[in-house]
Image 1 (cartoon, rainbow over the protein chains, first blue to last red):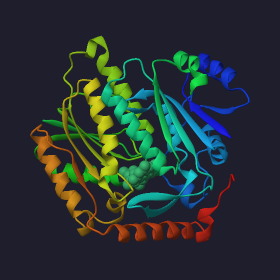
Image 2: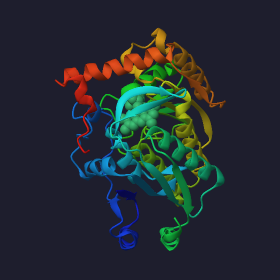
Image 3: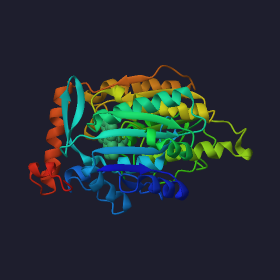
Image 4: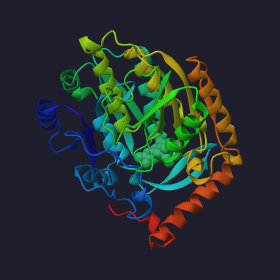
Amino acid sequence: MKLIVHDLGPEGALALAAKTEGIFSLFDARPPARPCLGCFRCWTETPGICVIADRARDFAPRLARATELWVISRLVFGGLAPEVKAILDRSIGYILPFFRIEAGLTRHVPRYGASLSLAYYFLAEDATAPERELARQLARANGRNLGAREAKVVFFPRWEELLARWDEL
Amino acid sequence: MKIALLGGSPKPNGGSSAIILEALRASFAGAAEISAASLLRDGPQASLPPLYGAAAWVLAAPLYVDSLPSHVIRFLEETGEFFERPENASAPRPRLYAIVNCGFYEARQNALAIAALKLFAERSAFPWGRALGIGAGALWERFSPGSWFTRGAAGALAELARDALALAGGEDLFVTANMPRLLYYWGANRSWRALAREKGLKPDALRRAPYS
Ligand SMILES: Cc1cc2nc3c(=O)[nH]c(=O)nc-3n(C[C@H](O)[C@H](O)[C@H](O)COP(=O)(O)O)c2cc1C
């Protein structure tokens, strides 16, 4: 399954749904979900399941079955917007708490077998070069830590341009 | 001089970040007027009385998914918007100091979150102070302050505290535990199993895949 998490407003979300119908499962990061509380109960008490009962909890089952995750987010300080970030923070049950060292680097052990391919589409009209560079580094780090095969990064000024170039992505 | 301590951990007790800020508070004692806020509990507005008007902000936060926790990003965005308002445009900005701690052993894992804080400072015209990235941060919660294992990071924290009092800056600091990496991971893996047992789960249950 291909999964998209995005923070487009209502209009963008409708346009995205029209483009992706039947191909992607969409997850709207707005209205904002409650932030992760750092309790780790998704690792130690209800393994794989966040204990906060709100909409963000529906993301984990979809992520578990996804082969591709596309993240569409406003670029904020070289990273994800808070709404999208909250969904990812709430999803660490996707991996296991256990650490292992692989090729000299620390990783978490995956909970689910299939490995993910990741793509980040950042939206910003005035992104600076250092902000773009940090976003690329973040995607690489997320890819490594989520056990992804690859982590693609593309920038667009607005969602309209992203959707206009959809067939090239 | 006024210094504001900003707690960026969402844990109810403030986690390792709160312990790190307490250590800082002790080293500021008598030299600065300290105020504190928890970014999750006290709400994200930069207009929080304890924050507004301080000469320095010292933010301590955990690393979440290779970057800042969502509520900290939200706080920074709202802070930027607050200072952009015409009535605040010429308000003095505090100098920003930051301590980011992570679960991985390598202190450098925190570099991306620190870079994001610098980009925030640049966009919002906050003068930059200094940052410290702490690896194996969970040890701060586990061992008492002054423990051998966190001694290196405590030294770096003291350096950052001196800089903050002088409103001075410096290179990023990255310090991990006084403990070999394998030992830290062995202890961490063991404590996940111990926590599970406390909740009545068999260690194998931690590997459940409820959605496969
Ligand atoms: C949602 C979530 C995401 C995390 N992501 C990372 C990570 O990407 N890298 C890392 O080293 N530690 C990560 N951690 C571990 C925390 O950074 C670590 O437990 C830290 O010591 C918590 O600090 P605190 O007690 O101040 O909240 C994560 C923890 C949580 C709850």
